[in-house]
Image 1 (cartoon, each protein chain N blue to C red):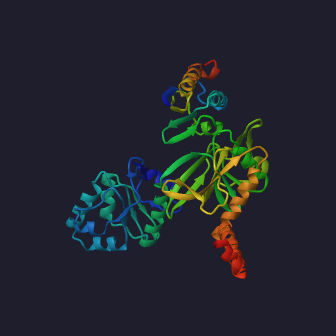
Image 2 (cartoon, chains in turn orange, purple):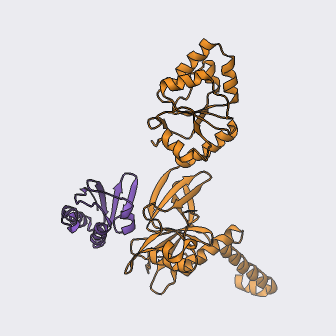
Length: 324
Length: 90
């Protein structure tokens, strides 16, 4: 199971989440193991039967005020129990509340990192949840090329040597943007979004057979690249196979599954002289037009149907003859 | 046919650009699909850029998975390449 250290949470998100550590503390050996967080709340009353120690703990206004109402001995006891748990990752005090001395003492004793943030509790919970959702999102890599074509993220798949990179180069030439070539990093975010990005090592380098390694950013400028893009469409390049039936109508687009998300997919047969860049460009435009509610293949089918109906109503005799 | 084999990088510089290019050349000689699994990464050994993302230094063990009619021959050729330090002196 994936886990992230409190140290890396702090380093990556201190600005985004406005976190300031309250104690000088080693943060490398405390870990967050999931997206769920916990408001200490009822745990402070001493009811700890279901207390999720392993989650990031939040102390808000209510908690601080409640602790003040407790007798010192009782307060000390419950804080000792909570903070002595080895699985406790860290504690965040929200609303910039004045942190009770007992709480800090317990944190110091058991080496639990404590942060303070000016953000109100509910807002902080939603902000950190978004961050953790991203961190814990399922990840995977895919051999392929990812392009942003007219604002549509298209993942181009196909066997090594089929011409994915050449096709991408063609598309860049036409003014579209390269996200990743050869290896695409994918993340499954909330709301069924599959986000694709490039490798930190490859960046926007590309290998073109016969030329070697080229740098798209260098040659075409920053306008020709982007770092990440949501994948909306999948195009698979395949060697032209005479025996295979290719989609001629586009009435029922196939799908390609990434994680648990079904994305519309096309198989495009490759043959010398076929301009793949144009075909993929048109696939992107068609996808946009469909998103805007215009389904070309269906409209076309309906139109033909309408004309046929009109024709047959105009010549009832024909129809009768045709049916006899 | 599927053949898997773990190969150890023994040359001094590791799987740097030139070595990776040699590896791609060898992998492309075969019809089989050649994949490398390394930790959470899965890359195609026939693609140079994919190999670079491994950033595999000396002492790294890479798991090869060859799938196809000539998988056995592919693994043998790859094994030899690794043992020969990608044709490098050290």
